Length: 410
Image (cartoon, rainbow, N blue to C red; front, side, top):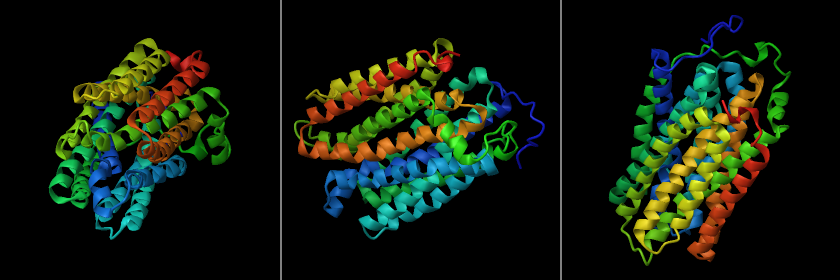
């Protein structure tokens, strides 16, 4: 049960308190349970493509189907969370996704796999739709950006585990085993999330909030009328689209000439995710000190520099570029994703966060597939050129709409 919404004197957990630590660690495991499942097929896309005799772009639909389901579900999940509470909504979604993740490797064909992955993505939408709104209500405002960075760091660990574990297991026993092993890891992470995460104290059900906008549709439309909010959603759409596309197709690029790297070594390149584990809380801390806007622009610039380095015909510069690209992306994501609910009105925080993630995963689904067509029909240089263009457009939109935002500096 959530606390009595009619008596709200709670101002947020402070860093160092036991509840704060449980909250951060609990959401860390939620990130693992969510993002390891979401991206586990990414590391086995070459095996999936070879086993089923399909193109790289078609194989990438195993990732895009889940992110499409997640994109479609984040807004409904935010509305559910306004009714039943943040923690119950996240718990329900994670448990349903875990069951679907255990069933997905049993698929008898690509069509069945895509259907199950779509449903899995719908269930997984509960965490990204709600987690940052939960943080903004449960952590003191002064430390909200840093807490958001810590949560994003947990999502990077989840994404890393999902890719590396499935890739290594898939190399030995096939892509089905790779996805299955990850599902088992996620089941354990889900149990830890449910055990650790404290009950909400700052949550007020939508129907009882003082001054709440009447109707869920009105709460959803409120952020859509804000130019800064729209610019933040564009950050998620473009930057996540670029990020997922690179990780979808870099493996195909590196197993071909002139690199000709073995599959197991390509899988280990997903360790570049550790750059995001470092950059996410760092960007959050820097945003708390210097403001969100300059940190966002610097992070996008680092992404662009990393993408340029991946044009090299030598493996080492490509790896270094991937590290920069990954660190820059997660820095930008940590800032933008935490900024959206912080800049929203109290009665539309969950909707603002879910709209950000709608754009985020819509970009993942669209560009994760569409740039694969460019990869297949043109060369790597054209592919990287598209990535850099997306980063440039994101920076331009941020400069236009976010420079004077009052929440750009805390």
